[in-house]
Amino acid sequence: LGAPDVRYLVSLEGGDTQAVLVASEALRPALEQLVADGALQGYDMAARWLPSVATQQARQAALPTTAQLEQALAQALADSPFRADAFAPFVADVQRARSAAALTPAQLAGTPLATPVQGLLIEKPQSSLALVTLTGVEDAPALEAAMAAHGAQLIDLKQASESLVAAWRVRLLAALGVALLLLTGYGAGLLPARLLPLARQLCRPIAWGVLLVGYAVLRNLPWAPFTALAPG
Image (cartoon, rainbow, N blue to C red; front, side, top):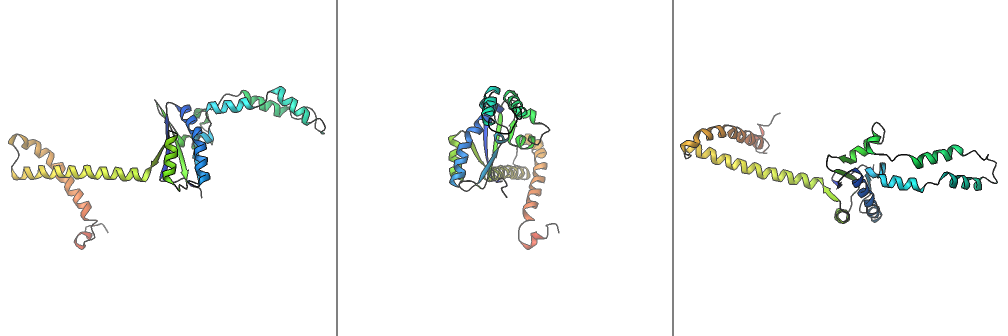
C-alpha cells in the first residue's frame, strides 16, 4: 500500500527551515539511488511538497521572459490557425509565476499542503528538523551509511524504544535494590538514630512501590497460585 515504514526514519537538523530544506534536497540523489538499488521502495520529505526558497527562485529564473516567450510562440504559431493573441493569458501567467514571492511554510497554513509539510518539518526556536519517512526498507546498513555520508541520521525507532526500556529496567532494579537495603536496615535497627525519621519518610513510598511492582510481576507469572491474581 506504500505506507511509511514505522521502524525507520531519517532526520536532518539545521540552523533554520531553509537550511534543512536545502539539506533534504541534497539528500534526494542518494535516496533515489537507494531506490534504484532496491535498498528501499520509496520515501517522502517536506522538500517534495515545499522546495527551498533557493530552488523556487532557480525554477523561476528558468522561466522565459515575456519577450522570449512571445518570440517562441510567434514562431510556433506562424503557420497555425490560432490568433496571435490566443496565448496572451498564458504569457501573463508565466510572468506572474516568474515574479511571485517564494512560498514559505507559514504561507501554507490552511491549505492541503500544510499537513504533509508540518508533519515532516519541525521548526524550533533555535533550529529546525526535517524528517524523511521511508517505505519498504530492505537494506538498513546501506541506508544508514548513505545517510551518514550526507550528514543525516537514520533512526531505528524499534532499537531506540528497546534501549529506553532496558535503561528504565536497570534504573528500576537499582532503585528497588536501594529500597530493599533501606527497608532491611530500618527493620533490623541498623540505621543511626539521626537517620530514622528520614528512613521512615522514605520507606513508606518505597514499600508501597515494591508491593505494587511485586504484584504487577507476580500476577503475570504463569504459575497457578499467581494467575488467580490477574483480573478476569
